Structures are given as C-alpha cells and as structure tokens.
Image (tube, rainbow, N blue to C red; front, side, top):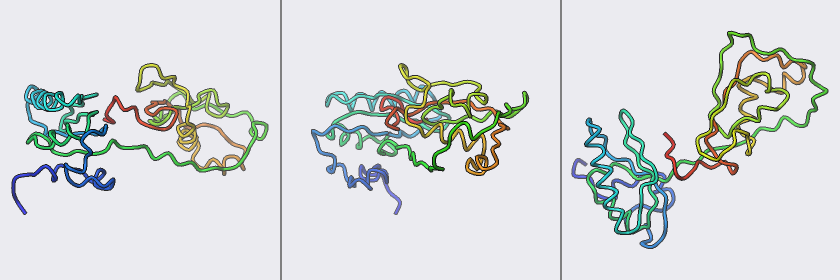
Length: 215
C-alpha cells in the first residue's frame, strides 16, 4: 500500500531476523548497537540537521551517535542506545531504516599442511604488475610466500597493528596472489603475478569495530 511510513516500517530485515519487528520489541532498558540510516537530503547542511535531530532524540535516554557517514547518497549513523531511545528514534520522519550492524563472514578453506622446503625460490611480481587491495583482517606480510608481494598496508582503527591476528586476510591474500593455492603447491611454483596491499578492517576476533560504520 501507499501511505505515511510508520515506526515499524523503519525496522530493517536484519533486526526482523533477530525477532525485532516492532518498536516495542526493543527492551526499554537493554543496550543496543544499531545502524540508523537517515534519508539523505541533497544539501549537506540539512543532512547535519537530520543527524542533530537524531542526536537530540537519543540524548535524554543516554544514547549517543558513535560515528556518522555522509556519502553522496547515503547518510548513516552508528548508534549505541537503550531500547527506549531507539523506540523514540523510530518516530522521527528523517529515519529511513534501522539495521543490526553487519558482521563479516570469515570462513576458511584448508589445503592441508605444507612446509617451506616444498617451495623453490619464487619470482617477485614484475615492476608494472597490478596491485590488489585486500580489505579484510590484515595480511601477515612476513609470510615467506607473501613477503615479496607486499606494497603497503593501512588499518581502520587507531591502536591496531597491520598484522593479521585472525588469519582470514592472509588466506584471502594467498588466493588473490596465486589463485588455486593447492595446484601451485603441487607445481612447486609460487611466482607472483600481482602485488598486494592490505587494509585491515576487523579486530582479532573477526569483528568490525563498533565505533565505525562499515562505509
């Protein structure tokens, strides 16, 4: 049907999958972390007003905005607040959608055990080779099969090291650099066609930081 959006219409699918289908499903005194998408006005100043109105709605309940992302077509706030604050926020006409923060899917494939003496001396990428960015849990750049492919690394959170404390990013880097790692191992050929760069965006437990929205 066509009509004015109601508070329950602003509850996203990720929250519905967790059993939150109506504002009253938020326990009034329980703490939540959610992503609140606001309608994106064309004017940045007006977008800031929308964020301010959300902030003022949360404040009486002790809620706060942890992070705000203002993109070309997206206005997103990472919010930490009790259920009563979220019930009030869902009444705001500026609110488009409320979702649970996304979680990384960090599954592993195991090719078994191999030792470095099974691999001959390998060639580095050509000087004009493409550089592939791995946005993941970091890359252990000292790994003997990756050290000669690394160009640079950054981290998303102050205080993090650029090393891979989870393991997934290093695994993904191996696939990006070599394709079928098992076949490469059988052929004893780890000549690298690509350089790698690393952006670490998850913590040692494979979780996004709560203080920063994913965009």
